[in-house]
Image 1 (cartoon, rainbow over the protein chains, first blue to last red):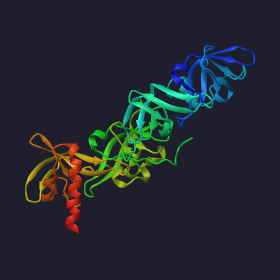
Image 2: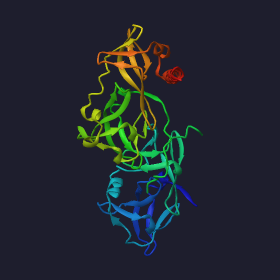
Image 3: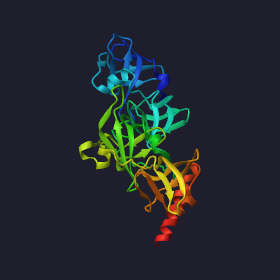
Image 4: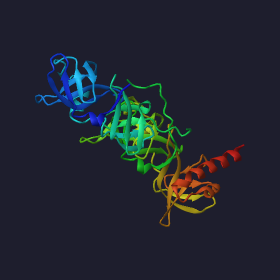
Length: 152
Length: 196
């Protein structure tokens, strides 16, 4: 498993394997409602309409360059989730962290993800690091995480 | 993917009902703010927290035609009231009567009188014990400019003007909310002991 920082990955170039064309750069991550997986990346830098690449269409997520399988993988927004991410309404970075007891714990400053499958490994804030096993959902209002078990 | 198999281990702490007003109602399975607490509905005769009336969130605020019953609450915290999903909200037509008429909250301003004839002050707030099954456990009573906390009990009677508490309740009055939780537990233990 190779883990990378979501914040450090922003702006990384996306290049197609089949013709070496530069498609743009990573502008945003579309994270699943579960908050535990990256579904798509938004690619910026070409045209006015937001373009997205499915995680499954990425050949590799390198430390320097993100390699796409083909030059034609970029597509327009398909779901409300895509649009919300592009507008900055549902993003993991900066999300308010709210536990299941109703207490806030700052905002997400960074997240680590597995470059193999796009799964979120952990999120971090000024309050500390939270493993993905405690993440319950990511919505427009908050990243909801399990409250600390008082018995532990 | 949602994680329905996971359970929420809600912590218990005490909050004033007035502090809950205005909090967002947030879904655990979606991270969305489904509503906002408009009012806390407490049935003073049955000493029960019935639930909450709701406002819409966002720019177009106003009454929501749904309510949140106490049993559908997953947690009440400093920053939000948590529900498992938006299906936790109940349409007004299916809601318990006090949540529709909102006439169960007639305890505010009542004079609290001990059954030995001592006036303790006036009710200014209801104290809620949070957690997966939130309950009303006491009153904040203002007396001579100071707040004290009086535990509720099955022995209370209420008229809309006066609220009568047993003399032993006065032993468990707390001067601060943090210490009041222990007082409530002590008071309950006393009542259980007297019944057995």
